[in-house]
Image: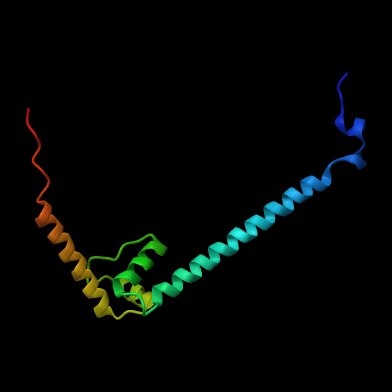
Length: 120
């Protein structure tokens, strides 16, 4: 013979309020987290177009938000989209491309090419 919790205790005595509180608390926590995420995204969007940030900072914010990097090609069609989203002129986008290209060349010259493999 098996024991039936619902029969032994009675349906009117089940701990429904504790389960209900858990669901309510979980929903409230999810709603709070969602609100915080929306506020963070809104803040990032404001920083992305803020004139207080340099063009490089604004582009970095755009890259982080979208998970993309600035195209290296100065004629890439996405440059216009990034420029509009950051409030920058295309020339400012081109300046950032040149700066990044110069930094890459400087790093390569400073650190040299990849070391030669060791032969045994």
